[in-house]
Image (cartoon, rainbow, N blue to C red; front, side, top):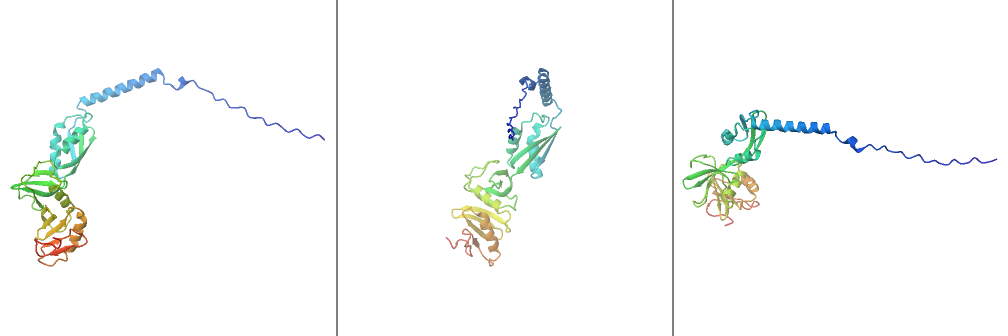
Length: 264
């Protein structure tokens, strides 16, 4: 009996992809013309809007800071009223507001059709700088905010500076002295005792409290830690204590002689 012959495997025929002409995917000349036409119309409308009063600034809203600081911001941007929101130079606007000695940073937003919104981060005043009979408010960054009467803002600590130290409103105090004190006072803003006077001597930073106690902090570093220790130590001080020295946070020292310290 004859054996059946094995069938030979036949490979499938390769599929031929149909190639479309490249020009099938190119826009037609008419589509290109319409696109350029719409672009030209949009540019023309935008340019016309920049030159007309359709989006002129009529209202300025300021967020952040006190009422006085917000009024100062509105005053410096008042010349921009009538300017188109579309033509507004945002960088120039921010620089204009940042020049105010009471402002740290500023940002803006266009609220069409006629409102300009400005948000500011104000300077935080921490002390009054005294130089002879003159006085200025100073911020946490050591920036001179405004000239004030010497008896103004009695709740703020006083910082005395030499008569030769240059002081400019809007400028910054020397970083190695008054500015360092201002930064330390900013960290002490929540200290429970009232700070009447702040000094930076050769032996370090000192705060004079309203009740007469002298708080010695040494180098103007680790201020938060030193103040936390002082906050706890003050509760245990006996009456008549003249000074509390926390310049070495792990070993606070108190005494009755304001001229001497256990570490002098």
